[in-house]
Image (cartoon, rainbow, N blue to C red; front, side):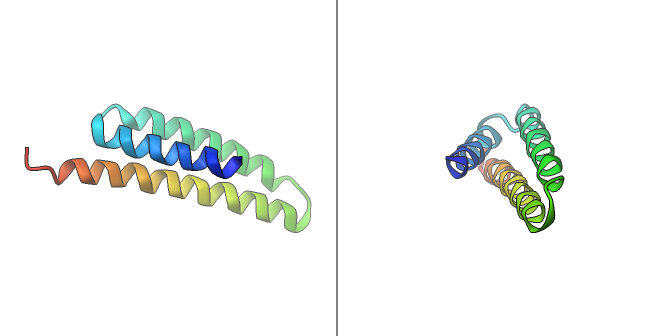
Amino acid sequence: MVIGVVVAICILLAILGFLVPSLSNHARRGSDKGFSAGQRAGGKAPGPVGRLLSKSFGKSQRAADKSHSAGKEARAKLPF
């Protein structure tokens, strides 16, 4: 379920980055705040579980940012 949510966020950010690149930064920052909050909360868990949760939220944030920038780059490559 969580993987599906992260994939949906990535797809949404890529589409927004392609269609409205200047306005999509707000959505990216909002998702970054959510992932950062999850990363901080996961890091408070004890031992290896905390590292695992913190790392997974960090990788999800990196994937969302990468899909957002890919959408903006695809828009920039259009001939018009």
